[in-house]
Image 1 (cartoon, rainbow, N blue to C red):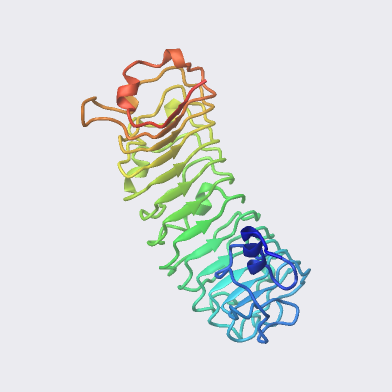
Image 2 (cartoon, rainbow, N blue to C red):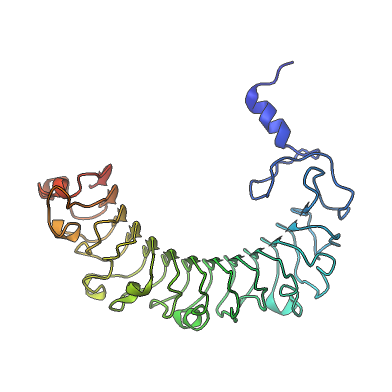
Length: 338
């Protein structure tokens, strides 16, 4: 019998146990199991350096054989990590511990800093109350989302750390300000869904992406974003921003491509640079549309690069938009108004 093309593809990526492997894996082809594997786990023969121990109700880290570089321990009941847990695999590169029961006090010694080639460390959906430390200098991607973190430890010396995910925790601005300033390679920082009333100070100037949505931020210090050399994506939605809390040129950032200020208390549209492409302002209190918020002057070569603009959920109506708006926003693909 001839299988349809899509069924054949599914058959190729389906393991012997009948489960589908997720695309977080470094390789998507699986065959027979490798003999160099913990007996309760799954090590695809075609990629023997990866060991999958997901969804096994494990209460401890299993024996990890030498040669494993990618270790997945998701959706278990692991509540502690002994200092010698990874002694056989000091060249481990990815360690994924999402959806377990880990607490800081039960992660022993320098268990992570001994992993001198570790690049990814994910401990999302656990019971951490502070960030884990010490960490190896090799680390590039740290994810600690959906915990109970109120304190950040030292990130000193993490010269390769590029991505930090800290959303859905209990962080206040002072805890963040004191910890991240020395990370000179940091490009991505997600601090959404925390408990910040102010913007944290001393964030690394190298940031390209900064997410601060779903906090309680009500004002932005003058020139706050001027220190970021290449900031491209900024989210401040679901905060308490009003006109009086935003100095005039706050968002006139030439590198910025996307700005989300939706679900705040704005009555006027904050001025942005002509290079901005995506601007989200839905569900504020906007009463009028000022062309000068987008274009300082209008001319053949002077116009906004806005492609997507959301204004819905405001008192603004289509009829209240000025005619010269379309000359300013001449390359827009979508303008959403009530």
